[in-house]
Each structure stands twice: as structure tokens, then as C-alpha cells.
Length: 132
Ligand code: CMP
Image (cartoon, rainbow, N blue to C red; front, side, top):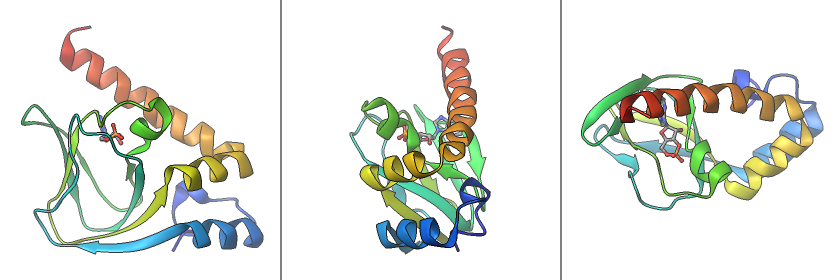
């Protein structure tokens, strides 16, 4: 499963095995709020199947689907969750703890680079919404 996620492409068997040891599989029902705006959190999610909605102040920012990830911002910034993420359909995802994600970034800096690109895009969207 990890191997199929573009975020983790290029990892060796050993690295994938180590990452698998630090990750968990989670299946949730439609309507489940996985991440709540303004609440501290330290779990990182990669969507395997299904779609989720990212909302802030009740407004939809983005829809996420297979191979998309979320929850990286609180881990990287140590700030409360920037938005809420709710499953729109039944969702299957992989979860990683903050330390698991940090270990993965140290293992392969290209993971950090991929995360950074998405993070910058999301921050720009949040700033634009806030009129900063
Ligand atoms: P985090 O702040 O930990 O929790 C909420 C998550 O929603 C955030 O990490 C990002 O993963 C995601 N998120 C925030 N803003 C956007 C956006 N504009 N587009 C897509 N995802 C976002």
C-alpha cells in the first residue's frame, strides 16, 4: 500500500518495511471527522480510497482523494489543525505518527520535498482566504 502512494515512491524495500512498521491502516465511515480545526493533533493521513473534504470556518477549501495526504501542517508547524477534514465517503487511509513522518522525511529527503511543495500551496490558499 505504501509503495503505491506517490509520496513514498523511490523508497527501498528496507525503508518501506520500516515505514510500514510505523504506520497503521484505518477505515472510517462517511461523515467521520478525522481532523478538527483549531485542535492540536499529530497524526498524518494518506488516503487510499474514498474522498474527504477540507473545511475551514464551515467553508470548503478542497476535496481530497486517493494518494492525497493531510495532517502534515500541524506536525511540521506544531500549531493546532489549520482546518477540519471530514470523510465524504467511506474512507480507507494509512496513518503515521508525527515521529513516523519525521523518520520518513529523514530516511528520504524527497518525501520532505514533496510535502513541502504541497504545504506551500496549502499555506498560500489559507493566506489568500484570510486576505493576508
Ligand atoms: P493540519 O493543519 O495538520 O490539519 C488540517 C489539514 O488540512 C492540514 O494539516 C492540511 O493537511 C489540510 N489542508 C489545510 N489547508 C488545505 C488546503 N488549502 N487544501 C488542501 N488541504 C489543506
